[in-house]
Length: 154
Picture (cartoon, rainbow, N blue to C red):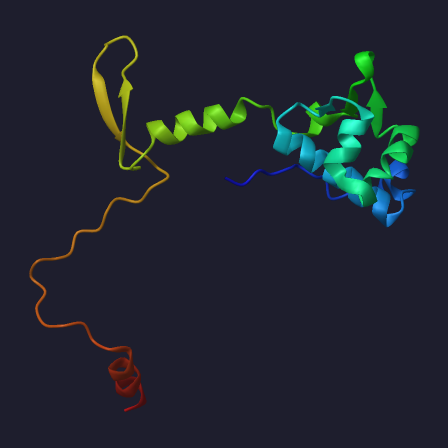
């Protein structure tokens, strides 16, 4: 399963982010990605934990990210990505998406209750086209592409 992070196209133009070196910017992006992968809401157990997650090269940038305010140390020494919940999708969206897919699996019809009547009604799902049925009166074999091209030249 692929996980995605949300990134504004103007992130690199932000006043704080623009001052970062390439390594610091990469460390910040990797921090967001690691937080997403850990599914921890943008919180790490400690500065040491975050540095360990990023590895020795990018871990050196953590102190500067703390200094400029992209990361902050909270109560108990936990490290939080600033504004993480504002930009990243909430943890329940995956469950909502899975339940939607389960309801619409197959894509042909969806059963809905009519308001006030309690009856069930079949309605077509607009996201899926109806299955094509081949005309049973067709005979012969399909025409090859080369025959069609030769016919056009003649």
